[in-house]
Length: 150
Image (cartoon, rainbow, N blue to C red; front, side):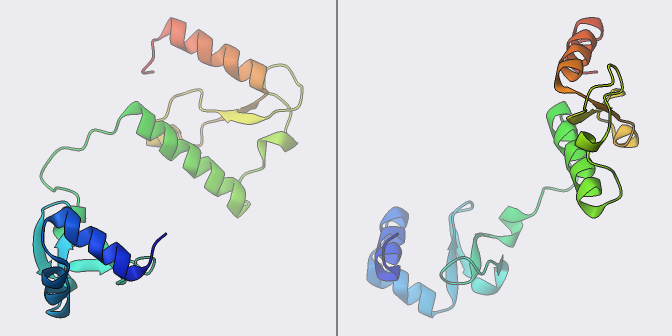
């Protein structure tokens, strides 16, 4: 990483203004939003303590999800949410680690949980502890029988 001055010079160059003009706008309490490409007052940016000025690079309007548009979660995002819920329950001690349980199918040591009813929210905790080979077999049989979006 470069110095703070060097970073500011690069930012000014990317916007297409001089370093002096860039610093003048910053001293006036303005910040450039990289998404909507406009200068706004710094209070319109959320807090981000990891950045040099302590504010997000995008204004709050650009960071806010659009309302009024239907949200259709993809199967992949449901998969991630379901995995997060299980991992969180294990970390909180509300659910046993899969490795401490026997495989539901073959009885060997389990390695992971299988969401055998799918990834819809109501089925996040409808799971079986299974070993890796049984999980692959289950996934393959579901994919062949039902299709990729079960």
